[in-house]
Length: 447
Image 1 (cartoon, one colour):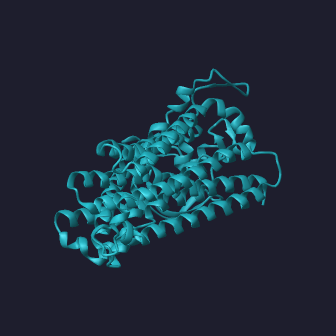
Image 2: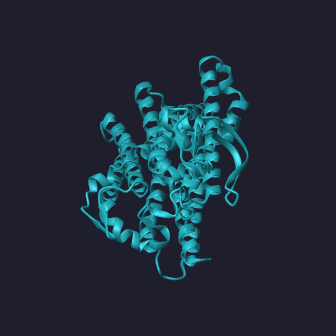
Image 3: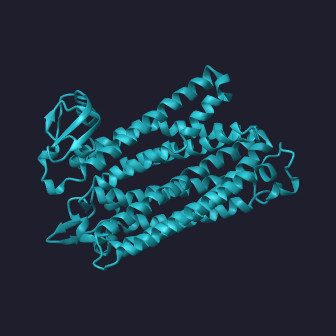
């Protein structure tokens, strides 16, 4: 394997795994805090057990997220030393602040796990809520660093030198808010659907039904917030991309010709050699409206840019289509669920609805991975958009493919360990967490 390809593959693989851990870490604490709040308001012991069960899952995923995040930090220096040499002093602030948020999160998790019946009940609840706030802050701060790569700011680039560095402007660059908002909404959607799907499956197994039903309904509620918020945050993100990175937008839509009243493309197979897209469904003028709220506005095509600056069109286009497809599917599922909640309550216990959520378990994360593929691959060939090419940032050291194999083995191992631990947690629900189950042991209530 070519070293440059191996370096890119290693980062793609590492980010692909870490983004799952980090999104769960951003959202699961809020599900946990909501269940805890329900317990404090209703005194229903099932909510207490659910809070404890989810808190153990949060702890497991926090630990693995810390490991994968640390590995990514090392990989940045290992694989992209030229990038870190120049970029580190500019966007180092969000990484430093992310470290602070991480430590707050670690302390809050400790307080929450061991604070049962030791702290004031509302302080204890706040510790759980603080886990979510600090996890969310960590994610947003990391996204700020990535956004800087898409929208470099906070310095002057003169004769190859990075001068007049302003870390505040670098952190709050133009891409920061749209990316952070869309990422946060997507994390709630993906994690909500994943957790709801797991509990839907457990309900269908007819074990600990009340426990898993309460868990399912909380998770489904969070999933719907994300699903319905995604089009709004996506619209903001798309308008930002159209303004800052028109070539990325053109690649997303496989839009080759500059035109007014540009069509929104659904599906299709891009042909880079012939510079056209085949078999696509085109909705006239919609792309122009989406990027500027004007049906007749001009949208630049790929032909307006040098070919050596084109990202891999097919990869970006297909990833964008996948993201849109699964996003729409989750919105439809959300609408059906809302209809059931308000008008057809008998549907809530039907197997077909539970199966729908079960099948949708991975949909949010598929869309999330596809969205990040659009973000990262769509920026190519730049690692710092318009300033430094990715090929110029890679390490000159040989043998990167062996690093790729090694890190892949670690991430696969981490994933298997997580599956084992979470599966064990699920199996312990009757004994440790569900007070309505005959196997439940009151001695474990403080565990």
